[in-house]
Length: 150
Image 1 (cartoon, helix red, strand yellow):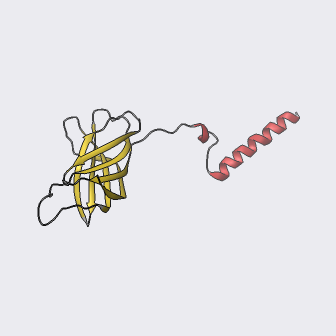
Image 2 (cartoon, helix red, strand yellow):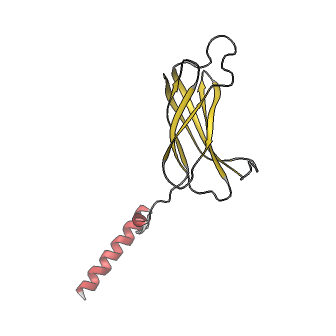
Image 3 (cartoon, rainbow, N blue to C red):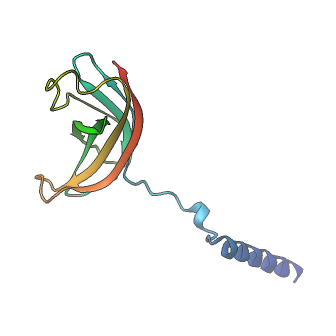
């Protein structure tokens, strides 16, 4: 009988703790479900104006859709698209690298981008198998970086 009272007291204490913290007792044993995510880690600028941006991503399967990751570098208030690619979506964390030259490179006076502070925005989006319907953004990341010589 004493063991039964002790067990009842333990159960009552666990239920009270869960209620007080707003969590269920089973929450600690529930595995996390991978989700779509993208991040930015850095960027380099070559002498010829070619920009290389890097980061990491993870995406889960999106049946019947294509997942793309694109990136932009923003410096002095001017965003420039720097490449994109088709993501591999199996829940595994991976790195990404996009390389390109800004569309406006060589126009006007002097180089468009310079080494120094910049912001990089990476966007992960889904599209239908043939590029239709319209894209849907599923993850984004925006991060200040130091655009270094490379």
